[in-house]
Image 1 (tube, one colour):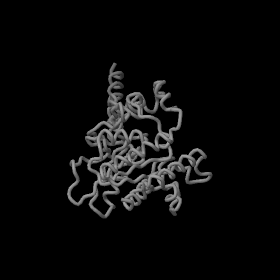
Image 2: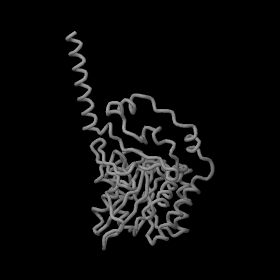
Image 3: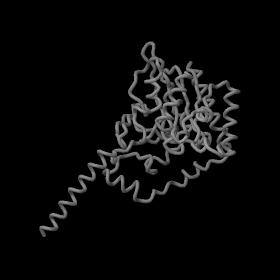
Image 4: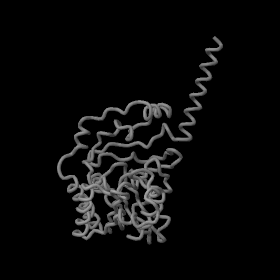
Length: 304
């Protein structure tokens, strides 16, 4: 009997230590949470402060990955509103200090405040809906950052929130339970309706180009400069380069930017001109490394 009690005690201690290690070292049990939204699709839940894999993640009251800010910028300070997806949001793999928006504030050489309105897998229609909901925050410039995949983005939907393990809407029971759910159990089945939305037929590129135009129009209406930024996928920087459908979509974007006189930074060209190898600019096939973030920050600061 004493051996049973001792075994239970040792197992209990081991589980407690494992729980503390997973929570303290990796941030399991405290994932960034999301909220559904009928128009925007989903947002990061406001007013969060968590750490994941050692990286600090701060979300303000407007679901931005930014520090709190006043209604109007202080005198002499330029305010920039950035809109984008995981490229500028940085996800769990980027510390708050290494975000493109934070680097811009440190490196611009001028008083500048950069607001980071973003969420993983947003595309121009999500970003337009966010802008329609919250406005431009008295920004002097609006910078829309998209990547090649965003040209094929589907309509905003909240169906994945709380169902897709990448978009949790509540904290797990424990750090251990999150690890088991995320890495050991099969992914939950997503609603058929979500699959239908993700398979949207028709001219997706044209719909997203129109959303970009509307974002530009809102910038003009609010007397803000508009800059459009496009980042490539890593495979587009190495032979054979962009796929045919991507080349066609990119050409449509370039032609629209020229016709509408939109200031457009295409980082496919910029990255190709860098002496740094493409692999050093990326942490995976789509998201940028710290070096990639630094390059984006430098060029965007120059453009505004």
